[in-house]
Length: 158
Image 1 (tube, helix red, strand yellow):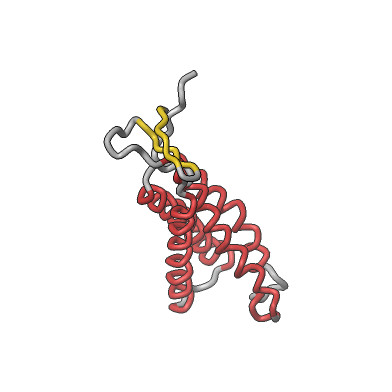
Image 2 (cartoon, rainbow, N blue to C red):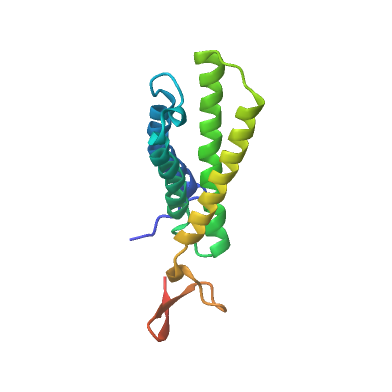
């Protein structure tokens, strides 16, 4: 049986889809909450403020989980977060300009900039957290993988 090779973007794209699938419904729910922002209704915004960043971290973990090098895992997490935040910003622009007919204020741009940067960084951290030690390669032979256990280290072929 041959091992299927995937492109470098396969995991980050799937992780971005995961992020969008789990973050869009709460964001839509927050936006449509009785025709005013959920933050204005009391403490009901707190679960949303915890859920969405956690989803970006989990998406980063998913993106970086199969990367052999730590830097590749972090980069895959960053890429997944970047793809997801670009889609979210484009969706908000469509909603604002063509569906609702709102203007874009400086505060909205500032909020999107801060939130988007934070979400991408959280995804990168998730990618680093998702990096598995079992994917480290042998220092002299990249075709060998180091497999470590309690107090021992052995080399396996893959």
